[in-house]
Image (tube, rainbow, N blue to C red; front, side):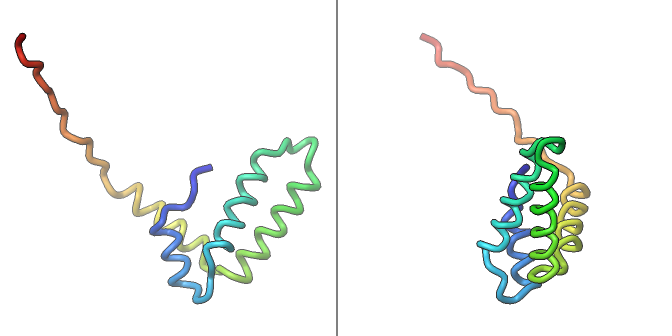
Amino acid sequence: MEPLHPKVRQALKNAHPGLTDAEIDRVEEMITRRFALDPEKHADEIRRLDAERVTLINERMPRYKEITRAFAEEARATPRRRPPVRIQRKPRA
């Protein structure tokens, strides 16, 4: 999983006064851990992580989905520019 973009982290903190980077980090850690587990072998651990993550989001960042979804939509709508091709000629010997 890719970490949250710094702009998303800041938007979350702006929308949820008192929210800390450590709380955002904890949500990211739980998501990463969840997807690293084998669902057949670790179903109980996955359920525990999901419940803890949902509780943390509901209590500390109820606008989480709204903010992350808006950022994702904005990123999709923004065309990506390719850097210009640079051709360097080697000096003649």
